[in-house]
Image (cartoon, rainbow, N blue to C red; front, side, top):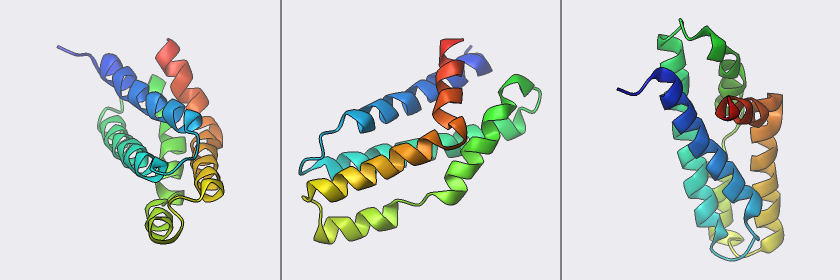
Length: 122
């Protein structure tokens, strides 16, 4: 049986992998679909983790990551921007770069990725 800690680390590792992939993209045509897929994945994983952490209040050592995840989920909606871009500027490398850097910046807000990386290393 998988422990809660193993589950949490596995999910956070997937988020970290998506973050690394976003960091390493070269802003070329076709990257918008990769960005869309990774953001959908991260948003879904954060939603699942928030739900799990709320129902497992006894896992208090991980409650500190709830606030940054809430903040990310509430304050960031990139899908509308990606829909607009896909129709007009899907192949524009500067717009792809700005979108990608904006997403990376939002994941770094409130030390979210720093918390994730420290939990994975534990």
